[in-house]
Amino acid sequence: MKKTALLPLVAFAFAACGRGEAAETEVFSTVTPGTGDLEILVEASGSIEPIRNVEVKSLASGEITRLYVDVGDEVQPGDLLAEVDPRDVRTAFRQAEADLGVAEARLDLARNQLQRSEDLFEAGVITQQEVENARLDFQNTEAQYIRAQSSFELAELRLNDVTIRAPLAGTILTKSVEEGAVIQSASGNVSGGSVLFQMAALEQMQVRTNIDETDVGKIREGLAATLSVEAFPNQSFRGRVLKVEPQAVVQSNVVQFPVIITLDNTAGLLKPGMNADVEILIDRAIDVMTVPNVALFGESDIATVAMGLGLDPETMEITSGPQGASSAEGRPGGSSPAGGGQAGSRPGGGSGGGDGSGAGSGGDAPPDMQALRERVRSGDVSREEIAEMMRGRRGGARGPATPDAEGADGAVIRTSSAIVFVLTAEGAPEPRRIVIGLTDFDNTQVVSGLTGEESLVVLAPGQLMAQQQAAAEQQLNRRFGGGSSPFGR
Image 1 (tube, helix red, strand yellow):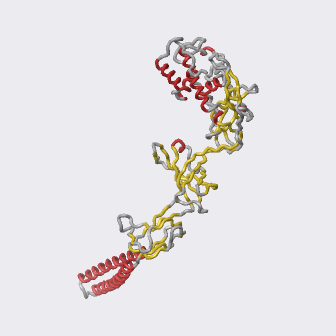
Image 2 (cartoon, helix red, strand yellow; image 1 turned 60 degrees about the horizontal axis):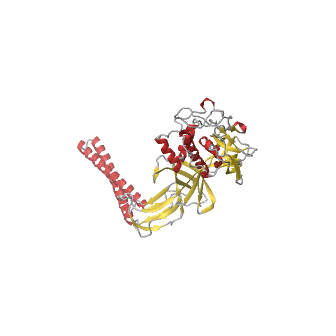
Image 3 (cartoon, one colour; image 1 turned 180 degrees about the vertical axis):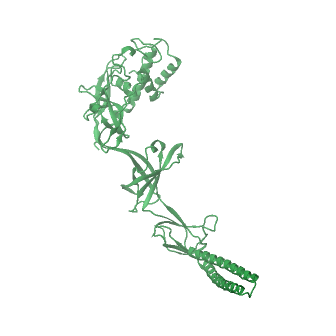
């Protein structure tokens, strides 16, 4: 990305605004627009974890006689992991197998006996009662066979349970037992039984991170994400947002939402538990004109910036730049520069005279305004209150609405307007309204309004606030006939 050029400090001489003092020197810097790429990112941190983590337990109780795997081994579904002492269950299996054989022989005998009884009854040799007794013996014998068969199947399952096999393909993460340890059955113990291994498939991983509620509205499923870990400082990993969980997490009175990001780990570089720094790409503008954010001003800042630059807010014209950024307008507030019928009006009072005093000129200010004046003198007044005061003085007008623009890739760019102060050929600052698009912490995309060759005014960080306080105090003095501003030089 081409960096925006920052020119050396240039000194300009302007007359002090509205105080009748001698000319003084205002020092500010200038920048020129640059060209480059803008990426809007949401940054967070989280931990890498497997998508599916399985605890391997045994359905059989007893002593571990053999372990076939260790931590870090790769296994496939059905691979043998461990064996439990099979002597008790093997004995029970053999007994169940013998009982099933006896029950099967008795069932065959009872079936034959019933058939003979039915034949003899048809021949008139035996009575109906004897046939019914034979049928009852057969049914009891059949029930005994079913019970023996069920016992045999259960014994067979228990015999298989002493051999512990992998439930899925993956990697052994932890091993909790050694050969000779006695374990508890997972099905026959109220505590859930002993955990033998933890295993997971590591080809696909996920990162669980918490995103502040102010940014979570920008995140949606499928957004690209870039991850970095300390183990590989010169390498980045690509992922995708899987989902934003609906339940918020509150930590230290900060509301955040868990966001799950999936990533491919077929190379096996990422390990569970690693800390990852995540950057989720929200939007992007490629090869666009950009200006530093410090060169942009809002509608509420125009008057105070102009006064700091030696311009008269009452007669200042806001121009529009190339490409039809916005129509040329008069001074902020929409009134004509000449003043017109409303030039002398003041909020909360009648029309003022030429000296700028309002109703009750030369009198005392109301108590609430006196308190506000004291706050301004002491610096205990917020920027928002000062901006609101200036908007009230200028009619509260805001900049015109701007239509959305279309990017090179067809994506819709949400635009808005901003004010820059451009140096004219004579070296004097001139306010201009431009249309801006994407913005990050440092730079903002210029959709239209600049050619790229202009020099833009940049004020020092504390200079605008100081000028706003001075402008607010001056406005109070003009409205209520007070003395000179405490911010005067």
